[in-house]
Length: 152
Image: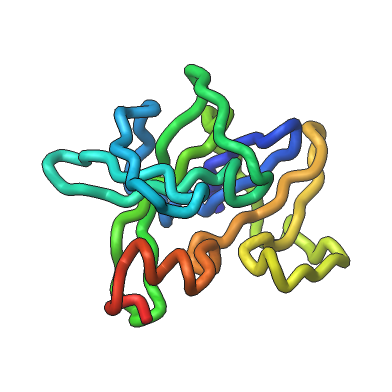
């Protein structure tokens, strides 16, 4: 399987490339007043507004660093109603793709109900990489804010 890799504070994460529509540079994002800090705002993708979530804020509790390697990943996201939508994810150091067999990923031995989106891990010469499941990334409260009643 092909995975898009990104790094947060030295830790490697990967998203299945089949869920990624496009990788964009860190574009201008319109902030949404009073939104939770995980919601970076809205970006314009070819005339269509796309909500954007900051992965650094969601996972680590701090905003993403503005670097040349910080990207917006436009992904397919199926909300709670099953409707597939586009969602932007700000990811630091999102410059690599990796190829791994599905069987290379194994359970980490840690289950955290607060982070259901963190999946199995694989180890290679670069260290450990953890899969991130886009489908379980957003808690219901953020889905409601981003997608409204349709997500409930």
